[in-house]
Image (cartoon, rainbow, N blue to C red; front, top):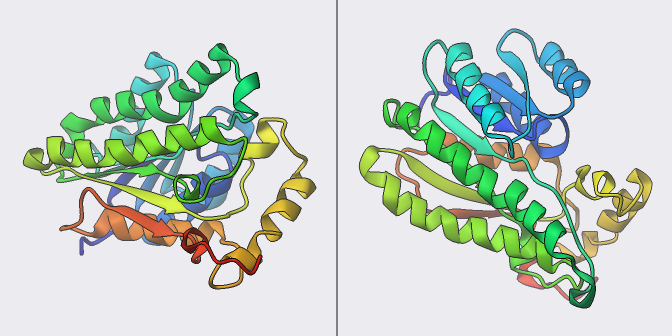
Length: 254
């Protein structure tokens, strides 16, 4: 396992939820973390709370200029190096297949899939020099069929497939590529998409607790621990690491 001390990691979608939890966990391990997000006040607040090893970088992953600025900021903050990219930024769009709109679908794929691919391409020259790692964020939606969630599930299926292809492509450069597949974990993705209030979202997730073999929904810290492991695991690549408390097993007592 690689020593986390001083390693430089860029985390996108770090203004809330899994991104913020991941940044906090990685800083706690001694890493220098660049937090990228669209909301200036939120990103700055989290970075300030985490201290000097955290840097706020405001930007939108769907904008080329912003992606380049994120990479440059992470390299500078890391003392001239980049060891990891956690491509966590994402959005939600859902509805019955008969009502889906082309524009909304394209926009979702831009955020959830295309942006991460392009950001990875920009990170490659830096990760190659550090034997670095890219981590995508999958979803239990690829294992459990939730009606109305086909757009989101499709993007996460794309990322999980992409993980294997890029692991094979970038392996000769010494770059590892993996994917974390979370179960039900509180985040703001449904709230930001206007699909539920924060209270409604949490109630819905808590209702899924009996469907988990371990009897509870997850936390941001549960996912952050898995991400930290993959960043440090020198002989793991092409892996889709399921961290879902057993939700994907199809437990039927819910």
